[in-house]
Length: 256
Image (cartoon, rainbow, N blue to C red; front, side):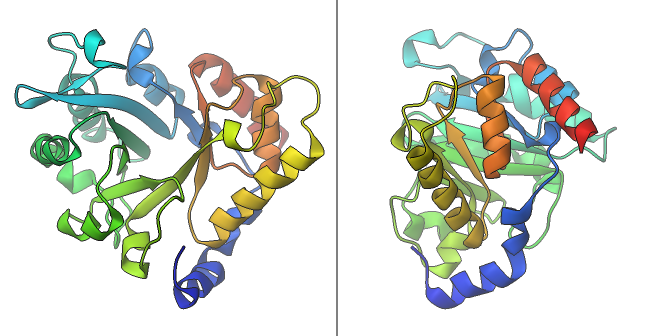
């Protein structure tokens, strides 16, 4: 996927990804967070390290919805996420979070609007050179890796390992997100098939060795699955059950 020299440097500098032992609530990702009773705040106040919002460009603004038919007036990325983030960051200088923006259509227009709407938060945005409070990740319909250079370096891209990258393009990848169902049909009950577990572990290790973090989407959303993901070293554990996963990870943190 990436040139050997760049891969080798990543291994030397970021090998610790594959050795992570301590998990806490910052390892939690709020899947389709906008469907929660209190979008953003429920996950943020629980200490989640990542939240996800699906967006559509509508009349010059980014609306948040799972599908186009569910778009509602006033339910926007700015109101649900960008304004609350700005408010929180002015008083809370310690908490870091990833905002995963899943583009549902027209990535060129959506990114153009996003660059306008994110402007008040630029001082808090991480770049390829500096780690700050907010990491902005683009998922869903994305530009080709060759076009990443056309966007500011505070825009990072979620990757699915389907396309090749140059070293410079790979630097713009903020994390890798893969479908759990590609590797296993396990439903989170009993013990996962050893062969499936090995496939998952090999994939996780490979991503870590390339210097990136990893999450799986569509994984079983229960304690058995969360425990497996911790054992395998998954960096972000996705959930629709914010309180339950937060409690689970707090208990795991205390045990460690």
